[in-house]
Length: 452
Image (cartoon, rainbow, N blue to C red; front, side):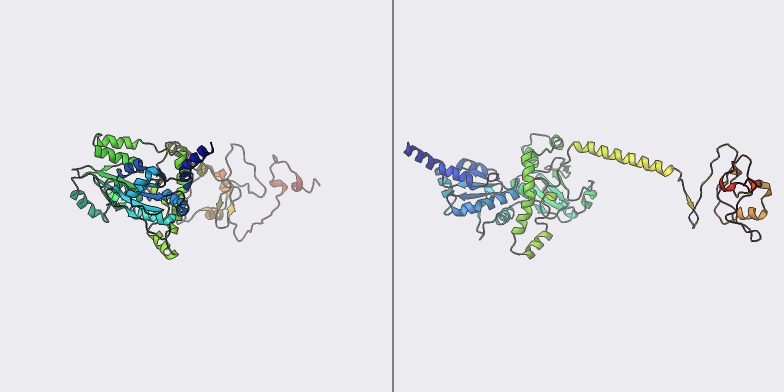
């Protein structure tokens, strides 16, 4: 019984150690000889680490290797092979593995000779740059709008994919697609910095840092604007169907247009980790701060998801369908605010100010009742007003014409004509008892001396 237990433990130890070699949430996938052949047939760029579970260097490298895999996911897959397994020994020998760990980059599956990692430090940043700087993408850069017709005509016999991108450099996604479909589709890039080239080509300017994919069918000089989501699997599906030729191009584009982007929780978690990891990888990949600043000026490590969106995507994430309802609600709020502002503007101000002195003028409204004179107001009729007062109230020809009032009795109660020098007006003159109308109740200080 003890002998059987020992044999079982020895048999399980390599696989258990191999499973524990990389972190639990790693994106590194383990390969055997069968899955290795499948990866080589995909003609895509990949990185493979040949390791042994008992190797101390492999154990120290595994976390860094996993971080690099997160930084380039899903464009460049990272794999590992446990060379300590008897079923993988032949594979490791065929790949020339003589020590552990051995890390190799396969640019295009088994079509191109692999490149072995020879860096002095096995860090996440070193693996990250080792991967994305060795992609044989074959993407042609068209620096000027005038360069497009020549490239389009030169490759007219092949399908062509042109990316109009506002950002700097070639997006990692476009590099991997250019490498994967190099034998079937010609790829090019034009930097449309402010959307001016798009407008000249009859397209919309586009949002900042957005991109457009133009596809030219073989034999045609006219492009089709790709309307699907610009992410790795969506574009790969589109290009696969184009190469297959079984679906009409317009119908294929219509299907891509109606694809809805709904990331699952696993994708969201990868995105959250990837943003921080991408910046950390960009900083750690340089020997000093000067090199790091130069790299940032060239676009390296700056706002990864502004350019790629979610993992494996160019541009920002497509808007969800619920956004239409949110937009309608915002527009409705704006409309209500504008109506309220219009109502407020039409209301007559209660205390308008006139003149430089800021005098408050209260206009009397005609209620249909007989006006009661107030203290100090003259009771003379309009016919007895002095010529001096009439002249003072008459505006000069240069003055702005004021609207005429239909009722002469609606004159402002607090406004009076300026007095002449011969008869100065007393500011706080007490009214005599005779000047008070009988209809007015006499109270307080307005009582006559005889009543006292």
